[in-house]
Image (cartoon, rainbow, N blue to C red; front, side, top):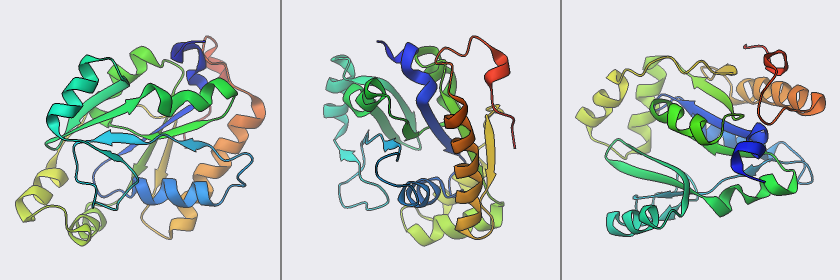
Length: 202
C-alpha cells in the first residue's frame, strides 16, 4: 500500500518555534504503553549530531541533497536555514497498522498533504513570551535569530486539533492523548473520503 492509502494513521505535529512540540510529543509518547504507542518518525536534518533536542539523523547539505535526489525522502522541507527530511523507512510502521507521529512544518503542509492526504494535523500553540523564553533557553540561536523566529508569520494551517501548551506539560499531553484515543477507537478513513470522520477541532 502507498503512503496516500496509509496516511490516515499519520499524525503531523506543527507549531511556531518555541511552542514546545518536541516536549509535548516526547511526554505524550512516554505516557503510552509500548504495545500501542505511536512510532515517532526520525527526521534527517542538516543539524549537528550534538544537538540533543531530538534523536535525528545529522547530515551535511551535500549528503542531504544526494538523498533528496535519490528520492530517499517521503517528504522534505527547508526552514530556518536548515533542511529537514523524513525517509520512507521512517514511516514503514504504517504498513504494520501502527500510528506514526512526525514533527512537521506549518509552512509546508500543502506539500505533505499532497502525498499524505489522510494525515491528521495537530498544532501546538503557546504565548509569545513563553516561546521567547524557551527559544532563549535552548541556546541554539542568538537574539536576532530568536526575534526572527518569533516574528515569522505563517498562514493558518487548519489543524484537526489545537493544543495550548502555556501551562503544565501534563495538561497539553492529556488534551492530545484524549483526542488521539477517541480517533483511534473510532477507526480512521485513510483517504478521508467522508468528511464526517474528521475529529472535531479543540
